[in-house]
Amino acid sequence: MIRLKHLLIEQTRVSPTTYNTVSIETTMQTLTRDIANYNPNTGYIAITNGNLWLATQRSNSLRDLLLQPETQESIGITRPINPNWIRIQPPTVQGEGQANQKVVGTLQARLFRPEERQEEYPYQINYEWHEINNVPHILVTKQGLGAPQPHNVNKTGANSELDVNKDTAVYNKMKQFQNKIPENNTKILRALSGAGTAQGPVYTDTTWGIMIPVPQDLYKYVAKQGTFIYFTEEQKDSYIKTKDMITKYVDNTGIRTGENYTDFTQVRGSGDTQFGNTTGRSATAWDKQGNYNNSSQVNVVSYDKSTTGNVPGQVISGKEEKWETLDVINLDENYFIANMISLKPDTYNTIFANIKNILANKFEQEQLAFVDLAVTIQGFASTARATNRLSGGLTTPDHDYGGRVPANLWIYR
Image (cartoon, rainbow, N blue to C red; front, top):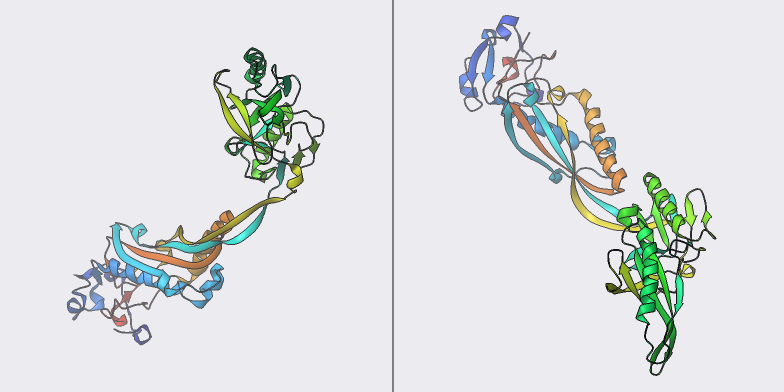
């Protein structure tokens, strides 16, 4: 093969007519034989499958650029690209026209998330939730909306039983309140209280209340930790919606507010132990769709503010290293001169900027850290014929078709 530094510089300048006249039509396989007696002054060489060869060499040019030492700094990565992570796929013919002469690089990166980080969330609500099946609930405590109602048990003693008629009457009263609450999946709860004896519990009272669930998928908070639920800046409307809903159904005495937080821990019902406690307590529950005969037993876990500090955000655990496909860089006909294989030098910064932006977007969105960058490169060719014609102001080629077309056999006008 004739190396570039040994290429002759006696390219032939020809007339426009000669420049646009086909002298020889050949293929890469028969090129050396067919041009043995070629005279550049008779026209140009048309190589029917030459663009496939050019596509491969252009892929190599992108690979060589990415492996340059200055590339690491230009695209903002912490260590050089490993040559083993750059793969070149066989070229493909796409169709007619220069638009099909291109090189596409698919970027992949091996990324990880640092072991732990503290997320800061600007909007917070603090309430000593009552959790049922891991879903936080509030207890309705505003008078006239279904605030807790204590009632005496009709019978007392070791074998005390509820008076069903009295119990049903209380249920019907609470059901009226429940039906007026538009929020979904509300529950009527009944808790029994009393003292234990050798013969068993002695129930002396029942307490009735209504709980409203505050599920994450409905109220759109980003995280929950202890008694706090958190909202991002983009979730400000959800914060307001949740805060207003709770305010509507709780006794307003004791609500503390700030610019970006609402503290309900001092209101009646927050952390109430009549229905639950920190380890869980059984209560009888009725869903909105049921009736008195359709009850179920639920376990109510109620938070205690004395065991929950004012944490500012959520601790995010680490993410193991893995390869992820990021995006593609598309080097179209504007990055190469016709029939040449080298990237135009004035396109380097554009390529670096595109890669840098792709990486930055991934890091910013998911706060991931970089380990390795990989690129899968594929060249694409048009159905047009490659030639030995120089254009774009060139008078010297950057290749010789793999030793088949010496520099002195190229033409320009």
